[in-house]
Length: 366
Image (cartoon, rainbow, N blue to C red; front, side):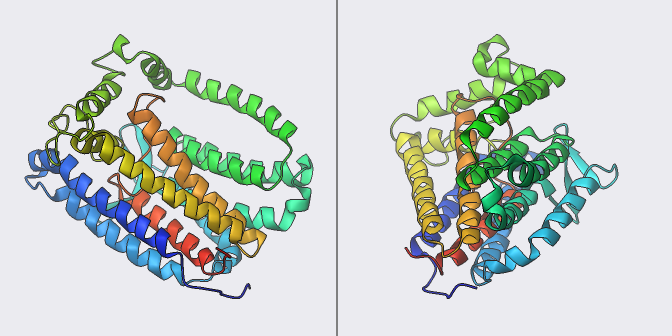
């Protein structure tokens, strides 16, 4: 176990809590009209998000004080547990279906999304594997194949729900980790070609995925159907201008943009706070990624470095996909914006991951 050197990264804590505060404000602003109409309580989503945030922050500060090598010891057990949850979520009567995906397990009045937690479990296990087997990573048999087999198994189980967005984030995160570990470029080219073929097959296997692709290329082909969300999102971002319509003054949240507090919350933020507000949020994410990269580079061992790389890659990929979807640059995938979008499992998972990153920072040379 490396020797603890310092206090956790203070800037990372400030940036995370600032993003969380912005998220709580925007969840209320984006959801108040819908919540009042559906639940007769304009604070319905905001109160639940505040509860999730409270649990997540407590978990973050607790995990910040748990030596990150603990996750190395328990990585296999945690990953097996998450795989079991992925199996349970597919069983009728246990798994809950929403918007065509069976991705949740009910726990009292709340629900958890196992596919969210397997992202962090896979990062912890893969960091352990890569740190122990890095000398074999340039080989297919002992390095690349064992790691990718497990990753694609998890991806396949997530796709059975189906949840292409979460699966894509997990897959992309693991590929970045394997690449950083030293895998050969040639192997990645071959895998990339295979991956493109598989991705095309996934799209062609489900008509709704093909519809999302065609709507992304030209949402005006079906403005009342598959292109509806993208068009309404752009209608929110455009009028925001430089300074926005004002906090709470969004028009698109009046039942134009479906469930604006989740995947498309950045559109409402841009409408109300304008280019300045959107840029401020992106700057906060950039600071978070910068601190994460510093921690990964300064970690005292390979396991800490790979663990930090995995966490920061997960956040970066999820932010890029969400912003890409909201601005019409990518097909709709159903990915939340970290720390801002409404969602208990996603928010708690992200705060737990930051807790791990903060613990690594206590050992890192910053």
